[in-house]
Length: 283
Image 1: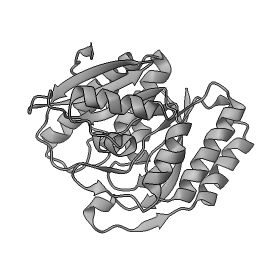
Image 2: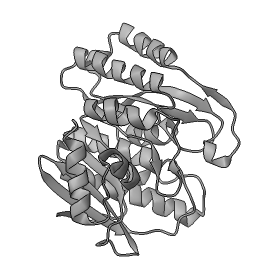
Image 3: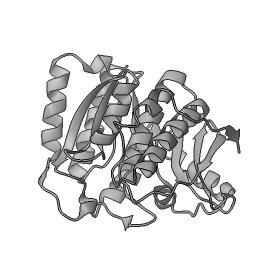
């Protein structure tokens, strides 16, 4: 299996490609990472060094991969934080090129816009680009709850409301949707839910809430894990259970270490043999 992953990259820590690539590789996937930025660390520290790449720079790298005749072997494109609308355009052009070379290839879009704690943290115009262009182009979409609400323009405070919001987003184009973190009125305070949808059906996994410091990159990791498991099983429900088990194991190891950075390397066995499994229920 081969995945083209177009995301941000940091030298220190694990966000963007630095969070997504290794779990996919650990699962035996050949990953072609293309970086949209190269920073020393994620911006949550308040200080960082490095550069943001523009759309043409991304397309140039992809063109070089295409010149190797490799796009016909690409099973999926994965995208995360875009940084600017021209990078988004470059990603969608890449998706079109991959699909032209391989009609079976999928596009998994992690629509990074913001979160409940920080609100919208991307540049102006990115949220509109996501809803108008990236979401309709995606086969698989992996928003968090904040992003689900923003894209659907509807609240998801109850399970039924979350299902309705997910259905409205899927009506824009994606055939598979994963809500990577979901807290509704039905979610106990000591737990967190994930919900997947496909073909009019919905599934939920509930895992224990962990005492974590603020960490970045978990959404990048779970989108990558979900994509790989979906590609292999072609089942939104099975992929949900597998991804939830692995991301819980990663976050548990991170909490136990008291770290502000994901313990991606130390917890790598959680990607291939999770230490705990959680039931997937139809909702």
